[in-house]
Length: 545
Image 1 (cartoon, rainbow, N blue to C red):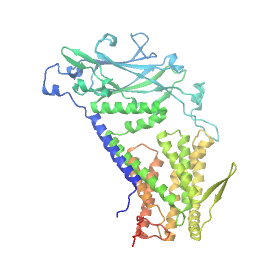
Image 2 (cartoon, helix red, strand yellow):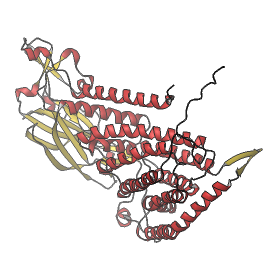
Image 3 (tube, rainbow, N blue to C red):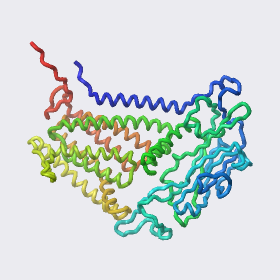
Image 4 (tube, helix red, strand yellow):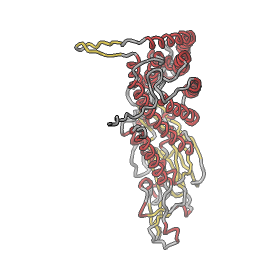
C-alpha cells in the first residue's frame, strides 16, 4: 500500500498548473489577433474586412490642447500647448512644454488634455477624419507628510514652503500635476475581421466608409501606466505654469491589447479602493520592466506564490504537531516574530501597497502563534480578565535553552552596539516624519542589516547537539526555493539596496544549514532522538487470525 499524499498539497499544485495554463492561453489570445481571411485571399472589397486608414499614407498633424472642461465642441476656452506638423507615426520623439495653469485648477480643480490626430493644415474640429482622446493632467492624492530633523526641528523644504505656504490639511487629498503624457499610435497594417473585432481595441477605433471598403482611422492611445507617483507635483495656488513632457512612440497591436488589459486591471483595483500609491506599485511592474523580463517575472511570481503557500502549509503543520522545543532555538523564534512585526509596522508607516502589506500582516500573525507554541503559553479567563500561563520545560528543553542563551550572549556583544550606533547616527543625520517613524526605521534597519545574525543561534544549537532532526525541513526546502527566487527578483525588480542585500545574506545562512544537514545525516526510516518521524507510514489494521 502506497503512502497517502497530502490532498491539500496535490490540490494546490493542480490549481497552480491550471492557473498557469489558463493564463498562457489568455495571453496568447491577446497578443495574437486573428486577421481577416477574406483580405488575405484577395476577395472583393465588400468582404466584411476593416482595413487600416494609415495604409493610404495620409499627411497627419498632432495637436495637444488643454482645458478645464471635460467636453469641448469648439476652439473656445482651450489652449494649444503642442503642435507637430508633418507628424510621422514611425518616428519617436519627446518634447517638454510649459502649460499655463488656470485659476480653477490652482484652486484644487481639474485640467484636461485633448490630443488630436488630424490631417495636416486642417483644424481638428473641421476634419471629419480626425481622432482624439482625452486625459486628465491632474489627480488627487494625500500629500506626503513633511520630514524634519527631530532634534533641531529643521525641515528640508522649510525655506521653499515658507514662500509657497498652502492652507490644505495633510490628511485631505489635493490636486497634483501629471508631468508626463505618453502617446502611442498603432502602426501595423493589420486588417480586422468585422465579425470578430476584439472588444478591447474596438472602443479605441473609429471607422469610416471609403467607397466600398471600411477603414479604421489611426488608433490613438494614452499610456496611463507611465503616469507614476514619482512624477507628480503638488499644484500651488501661486503656480501659473508647470512643465509637461509629451513623449510619443509607435506600438504594435499585440502590445496595445496587452497594455489596454493592464490599464483596465489597474483601474479595477482603484475601483475596489486601492489608492494612487497602491496602483503605482502595480504600474511599476509593467513600466520599469522589459516585456521579456515581465514574462519571466510572471512565471517566477507564480512559482513564488506556490512555494509560499506550501511553505506556510508545512510550517503551520510542523508547529501544530510540535510538542517539545528540544533542539529548537526559542530566541530565534522570538526574533523572527519581532522582526516580522517590525517590518509590518514599517510597511504600514510607509503607506506601502496593500499587495505587500496584507501578506506581511498574515506572516506576523503566524509568527505570533509560533511564539505562543514555543513558550507553551495558555490564556485563561477569570471573568473578563485574561491570565497568561507558561508551561514547564523538560530537562532536555532546558539543555537546549542553555545552548540558545550561550549563543545569544556572544551575539549581543556585536549586535547591540551596532543597532544602537545606527539609531543614533540616523537621528543626527536623517530626517523623519515623527519620533515613531524614527523608532520604526531604526528597528527595521537593524532587522535588515543584522537580522541574519539571529539565525545563527539555531546553527549553534545544531552544532552543540550534533543533530538537525528537530528542524522543519519540508518548510525549509520550500523557503529555500523562494530564497533563490528572491535572488532573481533582486536583479529584475527595483527595490531598496538593503532589501536586495537581505536576499543574498539569507542564501549564505541556508547554505550553512545544508552543510549541517550533510554533516549530521538523518535516518528518515526511524523515529529520531526527539520522538519525531519524517515518513509517516499508514496505519494498517491487524489481520484477523
